[in-house]
Length: 438
Image 1 (cartoon, helix red, strand yellow):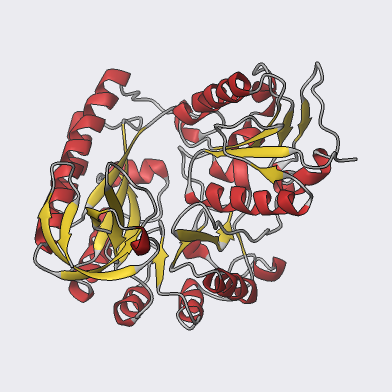
Image 2 (tube, helix red, strand yellow):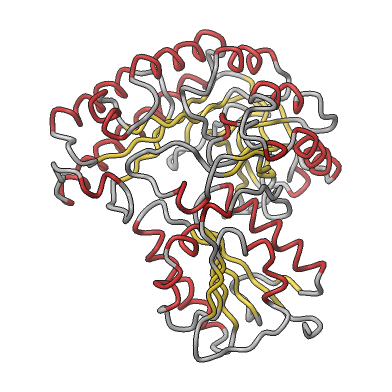
């Protein structure tokens, strides 16, 4: 049986979805009698929720394990998440890891922690990914000003570079009733902003009630959430361009809750590369979505995911991407360097781009991103927006985000934490934050 008052610490790598699931697992363990402590403190159990989108995420897992055991060499170390599902045997070889749980098992973690003692061999409990066909609702609270609410999991797309379907299984959704209920729970805890998260949230409705067809659409979800009382802001996280319908953009443009911020993966500005990636759109559709947002929401923040160095990306095709993004009225870029992943189609493709060239292209797009962000921030100066202030005190300054995702700063005032405040966007400081007038 579980000994009383065992302490547990968490470390989360990767996406907002992982943060939502870590927070839910933490609440589950608190009910089981665990005491939650900070990761930097000595804990009886360390739980590391992993990502496997990039090679660096895998390496980072090893570093975090080492850090945990430096704090408490006798600690019990458990690894969950995408990396744990994809490569459990590889994780089991990391010195000090005691337990590896796959996609199905992680939500039953309390059962595996009834007896906590280190053994010579690592325990692995990992399902076949086709068994991950159920939905566990999750949301994060307590760690941030905003809450991440999981509405969807898994993916039915077959992008040639991606391991997420292998790590998370088929596309499936929370029921609309459950999402609305959890959103109300979050609202009742005085959290001002919800961020919708999932693997492919635009596919919302598939797998609801276990059915393969769509019971509801993403627009149904958005319209339902818009009626939740108490929540001031709802933010849509990353959504595929082919699934971001004009009706949704139009609804957001009229909503008082949904904020003017979209993050839309592009991955490449070359139609040839998009086809090799097996993306479900071409650049003309992507461009249409961006200009539709700009038409209805001129101050909207538009973020873009882009991958450099995909096999077959010649200098010319990379420049197609660069020019496409340079000319597009977007606000910032998240730039990823392509890395070979086992069990993907892309790993067999010809036209490998040298690592040095991948890094060079990454740097070029990151510089472009900074220019885009600077131009977007400058376009907002002199305007009045609403800031949601966060809790950190950094050298006497506090920070927050406007509804359209401009990062703002002012002198620290404890009473402002988790408060919404009308602000006039004044000047951009040397760190790239916008200083404000009240």
